[in-house]
Length: 66
Image (cartoon, rainbow, N blue to C red; front, side):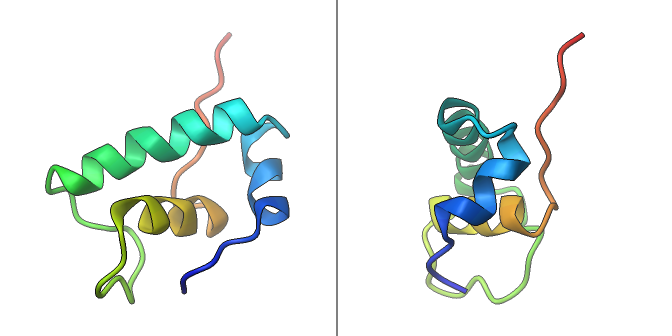
């Protein structure tokens, strides 16, 4: 774990960089505030990197508005 390619992440956010950034930042804040990571192997990683890895592995998904 570490570097997560942007191409792998964009399809998880409707091909929107803006949506991806918002989704990742919200999850990173949750992790920084104490919520447990949804993926293993998170030793010495920043919350933002963990959030991106969770998105890449489809553990965190974009909420669809109606």
